[in-house]
Structures are given as structure tokens and as C-alpha cells.
Length: 321
Image 1 (cartoon, rainbow, N blue to C red):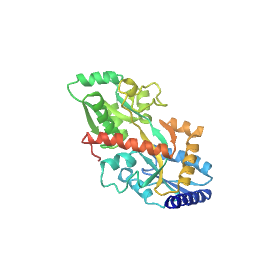
Image 2: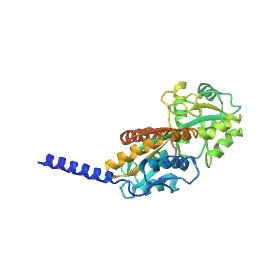
Image 3: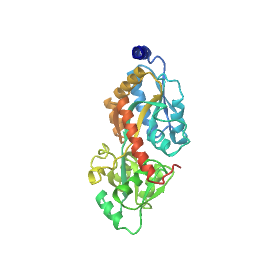
Image 4: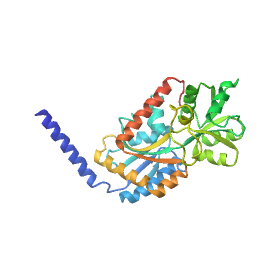
């Protein structure tokens, strides 16, 4: 009797979810971006949102809510009505790194935000000053192990993926690296081009122009696959350290409790929009790879990211600025 009642309840819930999805969407959808307008995160959201307008036959409005290293926007979406009309264009920081490193974050990304679609990966590279006596990861490791002083690496700030990526590289290779944080990616890369810093973890988009005009050189790609923007640069994983690979990702998340049928509809729409040839090509030019993973794949990916970065944070004294 009890099991029968549960089954009937589940069927009723599924029917209700399907009914909601049939009428969805019937008004504009807000896609909340955790950073100011103009940056790569904002631009990528607008590229996908523009195509989503066509797929959903409804306006998708990008709304910028910057602050708290991205957590203000994620918290805002987590507390929004769970009807599919308020979504987060959520990256690695507010979904993984900051909740792991800051106990004051007011939401649980796995409980308060529903995964919709793992949409994009931002390609990152390890670049170096042009006169560094190393041209690839093997030569860098040899240089680092023989150097009397630590090699320096710059990042956009303490506590992010670039900083943790350096700590991970230290752990994997045994070389001594000194972290030098800057206030943003551009000044961090500029310091390398000026010869003030040995290396920097940087987005492929930012690194490519500096390498093209000879102001810096590339050592390796830090992701699991080679960059489409810089296809000749090998990954660290294929250069002798197979466990090393990380990305800055961005996905679409909804408030927890959003009907599953709406989640599925949104996920398929995001995939269709992001997989449009014109959209993929524009993003590739920015050093961004389309992933377009569904809700289940996205949830599994998030849990793996939480474990990977969480394990690394436990073995370092890295703190967020």
C-alpha cells in the first residue's frame, strides 16, 4: 500500500512537471552572470543567449550581478523561484573553489543549485617570459629542479584556479614555484611579458597575442586536451604528468527544486544553441570549447571538481583573497 502510494505520488509529480514544461517558457528568461559586462564570461553568455532566443522562441536576458567573487549571483539564483525563469551562468569560482575555501558562502552549490548544462570550458595555458631557458614542460621541470631559487608565476589573484594550478604543478613535478598574485589577468600577463615574472597561468585568449608578437612563449596547455586556438601546444598531461589537467568551466544552473522536465528542456535548448556552428566558431576564436553536457553529466562533473580541488586545498595553505 505504502509503495503504491509512493509510486502514485511520483507519477503525479512527473505529470505536474510535464505540465509545467508544456507551457514553458511563456515569458523572458534571465541569465545571471556573476561578473561585470565586457569580460569573456559576459561575452560568452551573450553569444549563447542570443542563439537561445531563437531556440526557445523567447527572450533570454543577460543580467550582470558582480560581487563576492561570483557568489552574489549564485546566491541570488539559488534563492529565486524554482520555475526555470532565473538561471545562473556559473563558473568554477562560485560553484567549486569559493564554497570549498570560504565557509561563509551562504549556499551549497550541490544542494541549492540544480545542474542544467555544463556548457563551456575556457582553455588555459602556461606561458613564460621569452628568455626563460625552457621551451616545454620537461625542460621547465629540469630547470626548476636545478635552479637555486624558486621560479615565479603570476596569477589574477590568490585562491583561484590559476593559483591552485601552480600548487598542483608543484606537487606533481616537485619543482619550487613562488606565487605572485596580481589584481587581474592582464597585469599578471604583462609582468611576464616585461620579464619581471618567469611564468603565468593564463587564458589562451590573453596569451595568444603575446606569443604571436614574440613578447612571451608557451610552455604547455593545462587542460585535458589541446587548445583549438593554440593546437600545436602540448598538454602537461601528455608531457609526462598524466594526472595533471584542469579547466575553468562555465555551466547553466537553476534554483534547486526546478521541475525536472523544465531542467531537461533548458539543457537541450542550451546544447542546441551552443552547438550551432556560428556560436562554436565565435567561442573557439576566444579560446573557449563547447562541452554541452546534460544535467546528469554536469552533476557528475561538479562532484568530481569538488573532490579534485577539495583534495588540493586540504594539502595547501591557499586562501581566497
